[in-house]
Image (cartoon, rainbow, N blue to C red; front, side):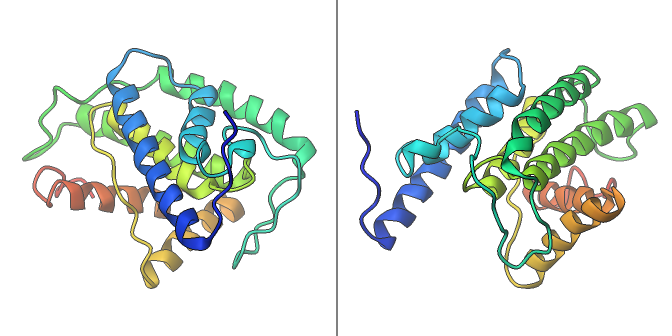
Length: 212
């Protein structure tokens, strides 16, 4: 079946919105399964977003160089992307081996060091895969959306909830600065903080208010 490209901006935005909803549903279901998470799962997230929007690029690594609007970051040359994503896959699988679900824990009151360590590992891994996707920009379009959904997949698989990163005005600038901070100094602190803030919003400040 050949999927025709959207004929106008309104149709494009509608299909993209539906694609993100479909991808969000995909990660919620996948998170509850016992299926392994790896780089192929990331490709599937991208495919869910773009399959009815831009079928040719859905889940496919880019074959051209990109420039990111309003960013000083220059993504790697497209010929480097397959090898970089293979490296990410290897690292990703190893990081996931060290994670444990906190679904059975109650993170209220004064969390123990063990609970905090388990939580930190989940957040740090979510931040790591988020940045790897935005840094490499492996896809022709939709890298930011894919990165945020991939991070949510990790959060949801290991007992937390998916978050929504705010992009209004200063929030958007804060997010971009957080990614730049990793690019320049390999410092994940700001991105981790953004994820924690997103979790606090989802939990209404109750369960996670002591672990920001």
